[in-house]
Amino acid sequence: MLAPPAPAAVIPEPGADYFERGIAQYRAGDYASALYLFQAARSSGNRNPNLRYDIALTLFQLGRDAEARREFESLYFEPGYESIVDYHLGLIAVRAGDRESATATLRRTAQGAPQEPLRQLAAAALVHVEGAMPPETFAAYGSLGGGYDSNAGYQSDDVQEVSDSADSFYEGIGVVDYPLGHGQFLMGNLHAREYADLPEYSQQTAQAGWRVVAGTRGWVGTLAARVETSRFGGESLHDAGMLTVEGRREMGPGYLTVRASSARFASGDLFPDLEGWRHRLGAEYATWRGAIGYELELNDRADLEEADEFASRSPTRHVLTARSSRALGGNVSLEWRARYRYSSYGDADRFGGVEDKRADALAEIAFATRWRVTQLWSLLAEARYARNGSSLDHYEYTRGSGLLGLEVTL
Image (cartoon, rainbow, N blue to C red; front, side, top):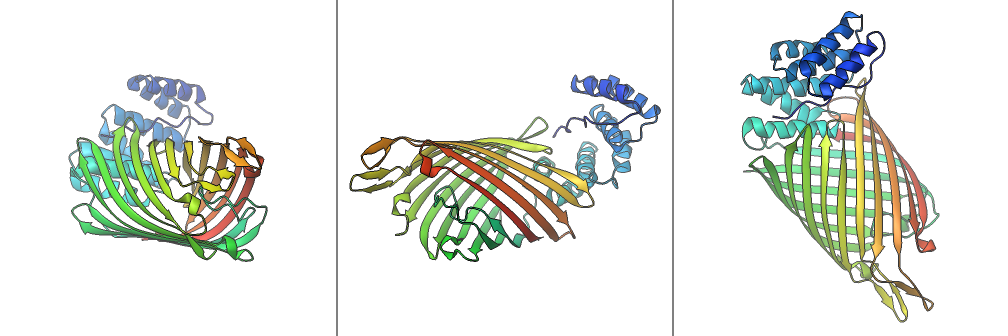
């Protein structure tokens, strides 16, 4: 069964010395000593909910589940603790053989926790409880918002119309997941971004697909097939077919996901040089506190060649990612995401009789805050910044954007 996360590492006076020594003993695996020190911190007058949470985790590790349950339940109405309490109460119910309670609390966490890694942990725990994937249910997501973009020409990894043209925009997203039974689903999503004064940079993308999910030997496997069509500035950008294989399993206090995908792009007249293949292989490790990941991307595109000029469109990319989220209380959460991507192009670009190999280094950071107004509706505010350095000056750019939106989750 999934292990609980490490105890919280910040707590105010009084009893701080006891608390810090308790943390050290917990991390060393001496749970009996950790419990003694945590209880000493409590006896010193500390009533911080972080301390109660650490005591509950330690009791859970010692197998004293009835006492752990009482400590967790005392945290249920503390801001930011509801979902993590549900998760651990579900684990306690599993050990007690109470399958019905375990399924109910873990499913509630898997569907409603504000942190995505915690939702994934709960979903993985459900696999252990039920011996198969959780019951298949219809799911849908939609959002509508607007914002400002300082570099409207940069729309994707493939379309890099670098410009200094800033503009306001509105954006809509729709996602549907429809169960067919026996672990199979139909999928669909739509995305559209329309610019107020620069319609030549507006983009629309639609996807439809099928996937099948199954669990075996501790792994949850997914096979998915999709088709995609995309338009840019009112013209066809590409049509694509994609195949993805994914495996996820529990590892320590979190879960490991490995993924491989291949996509074939048939490009329109706008960017014929993007015709060809894209292959990706990656892995991510996530706990309820956050996630880190790596991805290798290989491209074999048509490239751009006219007369004596040539530009490669077939990079090899190494991508590092990190993300985390934190509940702030009052149904408000804070999220951040970071990405670093290094791209190298095997063939040198050739312009005006000069040949230079291209290499890019892209750094991105995003912050978002989400206020869950009801179980269905949320308000979202997001800010992003990206900076791309390149060995070829005309590929360097910066981009900042902000978005305010309304979300609905079914």
